[in-house]
Amino acid sequence: MTANEKPIQKNLTSSELLAAIEELREQQKSLQHRLDAEQAQLQQLAKRLWLQQEHERARLARELHDDLGQQLTGIATQLSQLSATDERLTTIYQHVKHAIESTRTLSRLLHPTLVHDLGLQAGIQWLGRQLLAPAGVHLQLDYTVTHQLESDVELFFFRILQEAMVNTVKYAKASQFEVFFSQSETALLLLLRDNGQGFDAAKTAYGVGLQSIYDRTQAFDAMLKLTAAPGKGCEIQVQLPYQNVTVEEAR
Image (cartoon, rainbow, N blue to C red; front, side, top):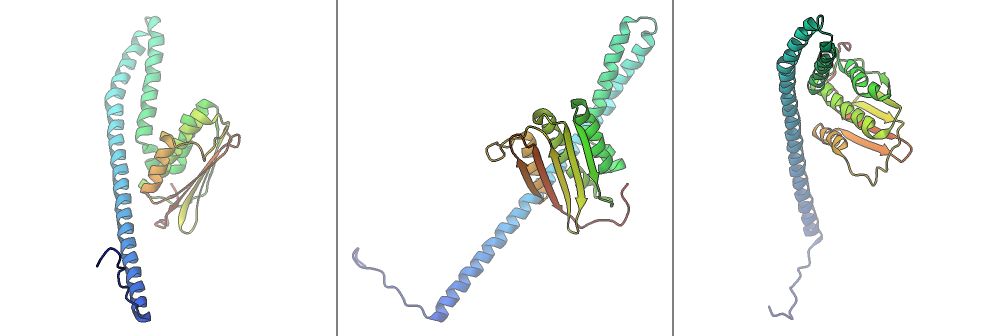
């Protein structure tokens, strides 16, 4: 064939056209199945990495509690005895007691055994006392889930709440933080709202806190919606597909 010659086009019959179209559809379905499978694999990998991170946090929490915490407690005991005869040691004793409490709080943030022992509702209230109250932010909690949740699901929501509260304290200049946690027939629903200064969600890149929330929702195949505007606070919605609910009442 020379450069000036055009390729000969075969006139397809209607049945041949339909067969070609059907073949293309099958190829598209095959590609979509492969993409879905790869996406599922990536989500499972992200979830395993997240759980591995939680195991590492638990190890660090134990080290803080068993090693540093016990050493500080021993020092505090000695200072308590010595301060009875030397008032100059009283201030040091108070500083050590404060360090012990800070170590305990850090240990619980790293590995929230409170959530495992008493449930997510108690964990949310504890976060409010530890993170919001010292900054003068009031926690309003509406918790209507009446069934016991799986431990990894409770931890998933606990981490999202932790990141959101930290962000509110650091950036929002809010006086109130609202938490609504409920359940539909097919999902668990978390709504977080503050009355802070807000920001332009369309022009603001995710920081570490929001990125962490986004990554966790992706790992658990959850829906995340963020709404914010200058002067109108910030609202975060998380919807987690969930049907594996026991018949036991919440702890």
